[in-house]
Every structure is written in C-alpha cells, then in structure tokens.
Image 1 (cartoon, one colour):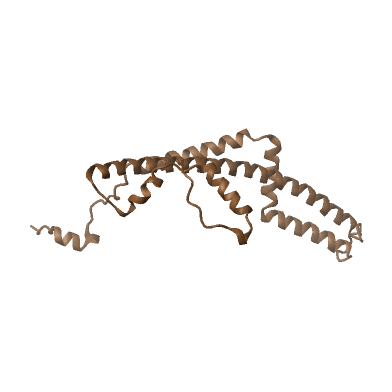
Image 2 (cartoon, rainbow, N blue to C red):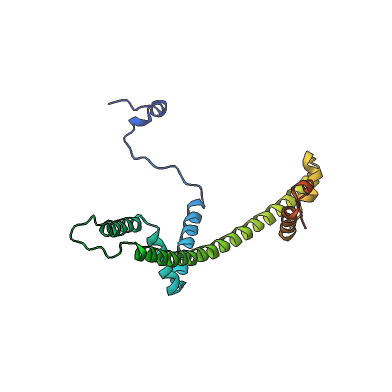
Length: 207
C-alpha cells in the first residue's frame, strides 16, 4: 500500500493535489451589498431613460450618432464627393455648386442643429450630475455625523477608563458636527478675496 503523503508534503507541493479546489471565502455581507447597489443603479438609469421625453431621446440619439466615427466617415464621403464633383474631378458628373456656397450653407445649418442637440444632452447630463452630487453630499454628511457620534462614544469610554492621549485637545472640535452652510460661506468668501488679502487658514466650522 502506498504511503499517504504528510501534511508537510502537501503544503510544500500544492500543485500536486488532484482533488477539487475551492475559492477563498468572501467577506460576509460584501458581495450582496455590491450586487444590491449595482442593481439599484441600473434600475435607476432604466427608470430615468423611460421617464425621458421624446425630445430628450431624439437629442440623445442624435448626439450619440454625431459623436461616433460613422458620422465622421459619412461626412468624409459626402463632402469629399461634393468637393471632387464640383471641382470637375469626377467624369460624367455635372458641377452643381462650383462656388461651394450651398455646401457652406448646409454645413452652417447642420452646425446650428448639432450644437442645439449637444446642449440639450449636456443639460440633461448636468441635471443628473447635480443629483449625484447632492447624493454624495448627503452620504458624506451622514458618514461625518456617524463618525462624530463614534468619536463621542469612544471619548466617553476613554474618560471612564482614565485613558489620556495627545488628541485630547482636539476632541471638543471633533465631537461637533460640521456645518456645511458655514463651510460653503467660508469657501465663497475666500474665493472673493483678493490674492494678496487671503487670510490664514480658518478652522473647520462645526456646530
């Protein structure tokens, strides 16, 4: 009977094992949370797409097409043939726009409509970006509030155990919630100051 390999031999040569292998366990709760967030974002985008008006959908489709290489190839072929034919380089094709006035007019009208479609799409994207920015702000304020409460709790535990640290002088400021409106006012005031009159860095406004 063949000798059974020891645990040391198996660890020394992991590739020699012929049995089934298993992936390492995932952190508990991580994958379901990620999957839930991904599904929520996809559902949100689908709902925003269905709620868009017909004009917004047309503008989005036109903008998507004009931003592709097919649009470039189409214009290269169309304008190339137009220019070559009206220069007399295409035998058997009469010159219908020798001064290229019609071509210039068509390009100008096309530019006007394309810029309008692009602006419509940009306005919609800007509105979506504002919503995401508001969501990020709310999540950040919630996280800051939770951290503030945790600091207060840990500080109370440290006081009860008699633990002193070098950060004790900063605990009073850390234990207060950030006032976002005061921070925004300070940012605007700093931007409005002249470069030579900018004062020293102000402490973070908390409430």
